[in-house]
Amino acid sequence: MEILFLLSSIIYNTLLSFTFSLFLPFQYLYNYFFHQPKLSIPITRQSEENPELILYQGSVWHERKRPVYHSFRYDARYALLNLDCAPQTLPSSYFENHLSANQARHITSTNGPVFLLTIPPSVGYEQNPLSVYYCYELEGSATELKKCIAEVTNTPWGERVSFIFDPHSDIVAKPLHVSPFMDMLGNWSMKANEPGDNLFLAISVQHPKLGDFFTATLTAKRVSSGASSPTLFFWLMPQKVALWIYWQALKLWWKNVQFIQHPRYLYPKYREEASLRNRILQCCQAAEEDENSRLKIDKSHSNGVAAGDTINRWCVWKDAQWPWN
Image (cartoon, helix red, strand yellow):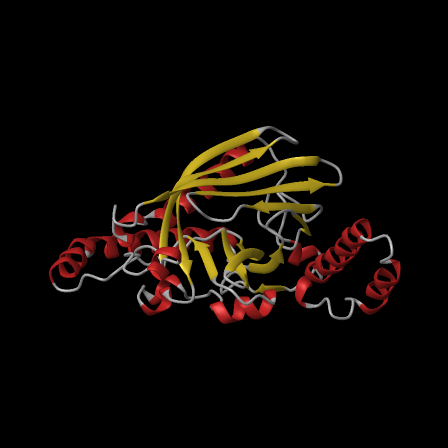
C-alpha cells in the first residue's frame, strides 16, 4: 500500500510542478514591470551586516563504506534567511513549517540574530532533508555563534525531528529513521562552520557494529544575491533533491543492501529509546569534560534530565502527514 501512495505522490507532485512552472514567465514579467521586491540589497550598514537573504551554491556528498561501498554527489542550492527581518519581505512559503526567530532564541537560550539555512519550496513542492538554524549570542558589540538547531526530515514519510547541537562539534543519538537502508543504532557526529563566504556542514554516523560507516557533507560558496531572482535560482531544486534520493535508494536496493522497515512497526517506542540514549550520551560527554560531575550524572539517570539542563537537551518530533502516519 505504501508503494501505491508513493507512486501517486510522485505523479501528483510532478503534474503540480509542471503546471506551476508554466506560470513562471508571467510571474517574472509582472515582477519586472510592476513589482520589484528588494531582496538582500545593502542599503544601510546594518543590512550589509545582516542581509535578509543570502544565496549559496555548492554540493552534497554522501559516502557509505559498509556493508557495501556507495557514494554520490549532487549540486545543491540553499538560502540563508535572516529570521528577524526576512519574513516581512520574502514569500511566506519560505517560512512555513519552520521556527520563528523568537522561538529559536527561546529554545537555545540565546539573545542574538537567528539565521535559517534551508531549501525554499519551488513551484508547489518542498523537499528539505536538513534545515539548520544558526543562533548567535550578543556580547557587547560582538556576536558569536553559540548553538544550532537541526531540522531533519525523512523521505518519503515526511516525519521531522528537531534538536539542538553544538556547531563546533557534537554527538547526538540517532533520533529518526532517515533511510530504509539504515537501522536506528548509533549516533550522529555533527559539525558546522559559521556561514560566511563559505559554508560547511558534516554529519557522520557512528555505528556500534559498522563503525564510522557513513558520512554526509554540504560545502557551498556564497552567490551574489543580484545574480538571479530567488524564484529562478531555486527552480526545481527540491524536485532534484527528491529525484536523487529515490534514484540512490534504487541503486542501494540493486546492490542488495538490506531493506529495513520503519521502526514504528516493530519498535513503537523508538523515539523514547532515542531520547534515553541521547540523555545517557550527553551525560557521558559531561563526565569527560568535568571529573566532578558524577553527582549530576547520577541525578540525570534517576530523574531523566538534570535540573536546569532541559533546554540543552531539547528534541521534538513531528509526525508524518496522511497517508504516511
